[in-house]
Length: 200
Length: 356
Image 1 (cartoon, rainbow over the protein chains, first blue to last red):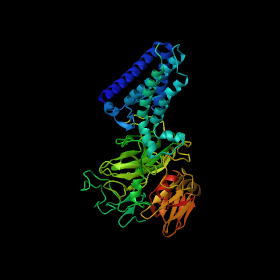
Image 2 (image 1 turned 90 degrees about the horizontal axis):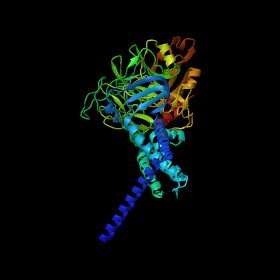
Image 3 (image 1 turned 135 degrees about the horizontal axis):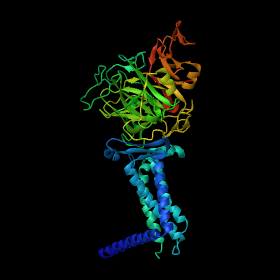
Image 4 (image 1 turned 135 degrees about the vertical axis):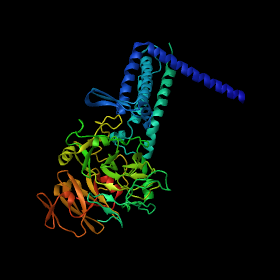
């Protein structure tokens, strides 16, 4: 029995290792190609900016050029103001564009943007490349769906105004979990796409 | 008008008097200090409890998360004021005006929507000027040595404040604690006028105005719920973000009423109708009340009128017993009143009369 169990565990570990290895190969392969790098850069940047717009940290506002920083920015940067939202420490105004700088939210946005970009880069390369096999064009869409989830998460309950749904305890609890769910889903889809790519 | 045995309503419509509604305190008109109930100082409370349409347990059961943690919406604890309006403040933008002992201050809605509470000092008196965007209510409270903060909880969509002395929870519109050591006690309130910057600065040219130097980085030009200067978004929609304690179809959910509540009941006047007709009358229990419009500030005042004295509109004010008075100084007992969205008023006070 114990032999069977350890054999099973070893088999599972080998499968996970294979999955990670295959995904790593797929990611590296995608990033060696210009279309892969382009997809990562463009979609990652687009997602990052969308994330900041969704948080209302980026948008059009008063015109001018200014930079204002709060006192004690290090302490402020760690102050949580909502689920996965932290206190902005600076306001940058460049022309008509306003940017609130919340370092931890920028870091989180960059991580999410990278994951979304990698998902789409691997999907695009696998779809267009000669060794792309079982991946259809829908894979890219699937990969982008978790990103949309986090978009809902960052906007908080005010997104409910847009979609016309009344807030409830359940929905508000769900908001708190959307971002971690998004992270897991993005990693999951990346592994799924990686598992379906046949390394050349 | 008398609020309870020892309470009173001042000339400015504010509730005054010390003490504790529940009888557990012994205030004497100044802020209570630490008691055996809690180590922290207490905000001063009124002599009598304001009317509630629900028992406190029911209100507490209906507290919901607003989606932000305690102090996730940060109160302004060190406000700064200027003589000139900030660049973003347009003449028709809403401000919340306060006068006290000759000092006039304006709090722009576009700043308070990001903070909801200003712990301020006016004419040497520590006060809190508060605003709830979801219920459209701006109210003022005496705070003594205590500051108020945003709990992150809502009742009937209404901002639930906490005091940083006892951590009691105070739904803004009720002005009565529903959780914590001060449960059942009501805060002392003062008049806050919802008007526009143009009207306020014309009426009070010497006013100062809250600046954007709040100590926080915010995009103050962005209102997460909509806009008032040409009403849009949440402020005009029939939808509410949270289900009201009780629905009421007597008016549009976001219609603005000027509401008053005493220790025995509540009464609401439709603001648009009041500004058009200038005098409206209603009742709390058997006591007649009269509301008059201040056309300069586009606001209204509510007075108890137990003798049913006739109040008539005249060219330069209101005539009562052959004498003309300004809207804010009729020789009657003024009852503190404030603007509110109808759905919020009706949710908290479903038995309230609605006069339109």
